[in-house]
Image (cartoon, rainbow, N blue to C red; front, top):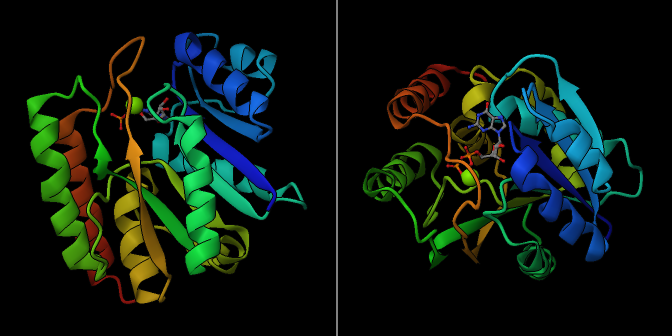
Length: 231
Ligand SMILES: Nc1nc2c(ncn2[C@@H]2O[C@H](COP(=O)(O)OP(=O)(O)O)[C@@H](O)[C@H]2O)c(=O)[nH]1
Ligand SMILES: [Mg+2]
C-alpha cells in the first residue's frame, strides 16, 4: 500500500532533519507543513527530502495536520496517510505496525497508544495525569474505548479521509483537532483501532503546548461539538 507521511512542524529545525532522512531511508514519501516557524524548519525539511508547504503564520498543530491531509491527497498513488510529530518522538520504524493493523482489521483510522506501549521517559508529572483524564473524557464523548486518545501518531485510510472532506473543512475547533475529530468520527461510524507505540523523549527543545490552555481548549471543543447538531 502506498503511504504518505504528513508531519506538522513548528520551530523544529533542530529535530526534523534526522526524522525525514530516516523516513526517506525507509522508502516513505514525506510532506511537511511548516506551521509559521521562525527558524529554518522549512529549508531543513526540504533538504532532508520532504515536500514542504508553509503556513505564513502559526495556526496550531490541528490546522497543520489538516493542511498535511490536503498535501498527501495531491499524490494520486497515496492510499494511507500517516500523521506523526516532527520532533523525533515518534519512531519511523513503528509505521509498519499501523499499516499491518489497518490491513488486518479494515480500520478507517489507527491510533498509536503509549499506554499499550511506552510513554516518553522525560514526561512531566502533570502530563502523565492529563493524558488518561482527557482520554476518558474523549471516550465518553465519542463512544470509542481508546487507551490513549492524545497521541498524534496515527494512520488514516485515504478513501475514508476523502469521504469526510466536507466535515473536515467545516470543523468548529480545528486547533483542537483530536477532540472534535473523535466525536464526529464516532457519530459517523468511523472504525478506529489502536496499536502500541513507544514514544521517545525530545532531543532538542521542549513542547510549547501549555497544559492549561490545551485543557480548556479541548473541553471547549468537546462541548461545542456535542451541542452542534451536525454529525
Ligand atoms: N506546540 C506546537 N506544535 C506544533 C504547532 N504546529 C505544529 N506543531 C507540531 O506538532 C507536533 C507536536 O508538538 P509538541 O509541542 O511536540 O507536542 P507534544 O509532543 O504533544 O507534547 C510537533 O511536531 C510540532 O512541531 C504549534 O502551533 N504548536
Ligand atoms: Mg512532541
